[in-house]
Image (cartoon, rainbow, N blue to C red; front, side, top):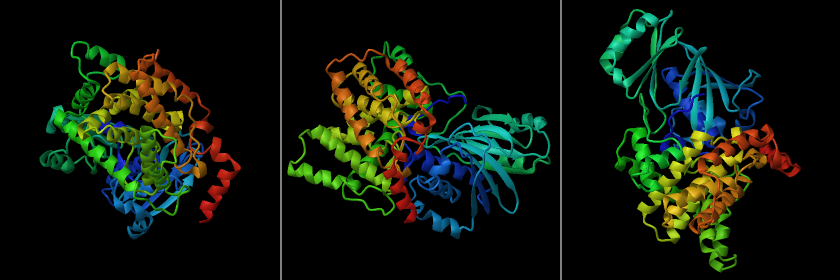
Length: 519
């Protein structure tokens, strides 16, 4: 799979969502929404097939894969409140769903093979959830495709090979806006940055050789386009780009996202401002207390806050504030409140807990917190471009470890540090995160996930201070990321794939899981 050009808002900080897992909730929801479009928004029957060697067999219910996928079939967005009643709503919609476990040689652990039917048509689709809510549809009706949800994807179904139609259709479309591909049978695939205009669409639909046309709408916040050019893709390229410009790291993040998304600097800043406000609201809502029957940990942040006020904790104002905020966000996630996956739902407490926690104690303005989050987002782009955010591919280092490196750089910005210090902090934090397992107790993204988020945040704080003090990080960030990826992918499958090893298979964890099933 060829690496695409990453966006801070598509791939790193986001989506805004509900649910325990960005891979298994937000990713599956986005897949479901696109597949709904494939049937012109009318679904009667669905067959979902998971390969037993993948992760989805164990996460279908426990980590909200069903919640996300079914909500997508209902056309809900990732933060829609109706997600909480997805089972009732899918019954009301009359969609009949079956789930089978079938060995079909799936190469990716988060592989969906889905057959959808209505009274007019049947389609079979293979799709992947790639971590952090990112997806790829790789096959439709036996034809290879690559759809990530960041284009308008038009499929023109033709009864025979349609090579002769490609040139004719291209003449009706704005050449600078489209990428026209011929998949031979069963369809011609058109990718555009905006909907095809009505006149051209009517010509296509009325063509004698065309049986049917469907449009799969974008599901990502930043739309792609042809011939994207970004100023850099890794840390080394960024440093060379900045040689004579002397831009701060947050300014480089803005420059990158302007080029990637074809948007203004003001739009980049405002998009991040919206995300920061949602993160802050998640913290503040979580600190008022959360309730949800189907979880294994109670709301513990209130206990921490009480002991802080009473002076009964070891005194470290910044770290204790961060622990409190990380806990509040994780409790919002487990109670299906609105959170921001940053870079994943499993690591959603680390970045807002550190940046907003430290920012408030430092009396930082909202603008400075936004800049720190942009810094973190750019570090995340470098991580995702050279490695992954998917625990199924590289263990929890891909989630909490990545969040720790991102947060460390953001903290340096808040403290008034420079670009080199921010990069040093990210390098140190990532170096300390190699080899983290993915082993959630009772297959819920609660424990040891909470502790790993807290550990990642504490690591970020320590590494930020070390970098500010001039500690040597020794290994450049790009080289750290290459090693980071190699180590993560070298972990045994049981330690980097949800609930197949480690704490998840202890006697007590299995008892907890059984008790939840009985409920």
